[in-house]
Amino acid sequence: MKFSPALKALVVGVALATSSAAMAITSSFVVDAKANSTSGGGTGVNTFSLVAGQQFSVTVDENDLWNAGALPRWSNANGLNTNLYYANGMDPEVSVSSGTQIGSVFGNWTQGGLTDAYGSLVGQIGSGSFFKIGTSFTGTASASGFLKLFYFDSNLADNSGSITAQVTAVPEPETYAMLLAGLGLMAGIARSRKNK
Image (tube, rainbow, N blue to C red):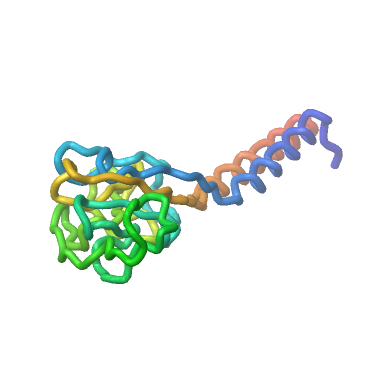
């Protein structure tokens, strides 16, 4: 069976679109401890629009720091759950003498269906509950909507600093199914026209 040049071009275009869609999409998003706090009027950072069941991941460099106020309240995206953060004189975000303790354990905060360490990076899909992301998260969307990122805290007034989150979204399987169905439909139309 021979196909017209237009149909061949369409098949090639759909094949390229399918292979492009198979690739995950990754983007960087800056999350600010003050502007993107879960409390006190802060708003989340919109990342990707996800559909329920879609796979995604979020990673943050463990050395990327933000804070919930006066020392020792600096932490990474895992929050104020450890005493292991000490300035070494090389931390660009923290201007203190080498050896000063900059982070400590401050207990947990409860908000929006989540109890976790103050200063944690948390996510929310649509208007759903908050969930812990920290420095590394991989999972599937529990609902459809934008994935929003927040600094988990009770008071944004004394927060400062920001972290950069790498968010990867894997295209949902329905995208492939629609592309293949369209290709099959076009092939059927071409056969029908040739047989007339």
